Length: 402
Length: 121
Image (cartoon, each protein chain N blue to C red):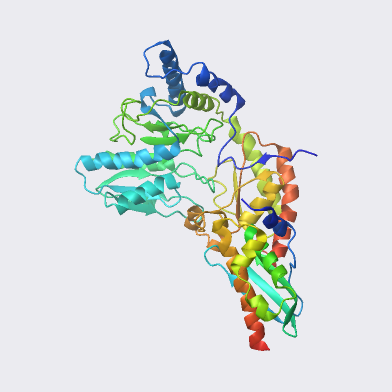
């Protein structure tokens, strides 16, 4: 029997670990297994590896090594950034510090903000986005108050891939901070951006930045929070005093080594190659399938993301059939979520639940080939046609929008 | 996530498609997730002679539609009206808990079709 194809177009969910990365990690499981806090040789060896990864990360971010803190992943980094700044500000006597975030953030940012608000420990402004999925800097400026302590806006969105105006927000905050007694800190969740966009923290003007290993061909279970020197923040995880007292817990040495290597291997060429294939996918789908809409801005968008609504074909069904044919994608349809509510990101860009219901996301990776895209373009039109037939869908001749 | 039988019914749905000159049509939808299901009936002497469906929905919505048409076919209206969501789930073997409401939607669409038939005949 012919082995089933495996065409992985869900790279925004996770990426395969690069073989070079896993080779670098391997010795740190059973040979160089020391605790980086131990004084003996094995400990020293582990410490050196952790610090080398810290330097690699610092190089990438254009920051000091001591501003890089390793965590268990971007969810922890985001939770720490939000909760840590809010707690520190409260301890300085600011009652109910004001936080600003956007409606299309990852839940790892939104939920901690909402919990702080619910407990009465902070006040929260959730900025809407326009129909292209972009935060408007003017709206943000209007929402800033005297007691605003933190702005958290993601660099690139995980579902529709839209790139937020981080640099402009950074510049705005820098200008405002010059005349303020208490600084407004700026956090960005850069998880999806790291692969394709320059993340030099000084160019962006951010004070805190979250990233994750497993979205960049590194391992799961490891991430980073960048903290600009002097950032007022309390630790989230206490005990043991690791990471200069800011993040306790024995270092995940193998994971950290993998993260450092994965970051080192990011190259600007990655984006150009992926973008060519992504555009081929978009053009092909819009040409061969009627009644399709591309969601989110095409211009301000990660090069690996394509996100469509196929009228008359429910998203989970499309993803399921594609998966049976060896093509792995995802959907924002309520039918595929545990809560039976559609993706909050798609709702925020103004998609009605019916449009989220028919959405499918393709996210390419550095391993994606032209032959794989050709295969998808071959099998997708009949899949959509068949589901439309089951639904009794009649074409309304929607003009492709992009 | 889905049982073999659910996948079978999704991939090769029974009684699928719009019916020409049906005696009655019933429609049900789930506003929460957006699925829509239509059931067409042809009735002769109180018995369902032909039945078909159109469903815009997920794997389990399509599979439950297919299954309920199989369960209702050749039944009297009184019998068909008694089909419960649990019957549909049992016949399919298993449905993920979050998908059990799809079976409820299938039952609602069939009930609506029967109700519409009784109103007009």
